[in-house]
Image (cartoon, rainbow, N blue to C red; front, side, top):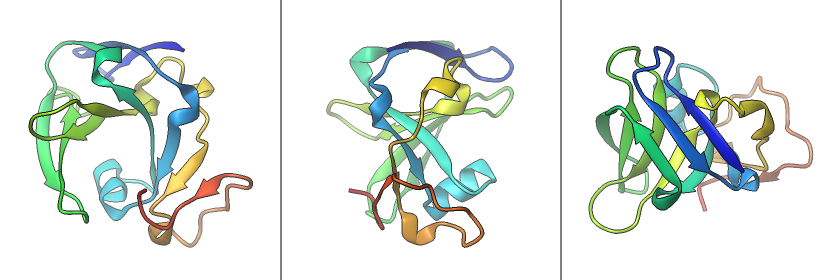
Length: 134
C-alpha cells in the first residue's frame, strides 16, 4: 500500500510503501512518555520502501533490551515521525501512523508490551497480544 504523510507543520514529508498488516500498538512506558498518551501506533517499513523530504532531528534512547533506538521528529513542530535502529546494517522504520494521510486504513493487528498497558484502556478484542516485544 502506498502512503504519504509528514509532520504537522509540513517541514518533513514522506512517501512509503507499507504492508498494512504490519501495523501494531506499543504500550511500552517509553512510547507512553514520548507520545504523552497511553500508547503509540506504528507500521514497520524497510528503509528501501520510504523516502523523506526534509531532515528530522534525531534523539537516541536506550530501550529495555539495551538496544539504542533513533527517534526521528520534526525540529520545528515536534511531531514524532519514526524510530529505527542505530548503527550499521539495514534499517526498518517504525513509522508513526498518526502522521500518515492514510492513517484510517492502518488498523493495528497486534499489540506489544501489553504488560505496560494502562489499566483503564479497553481491551482490543481479537488482536494478537505480546507481554513484551517479540
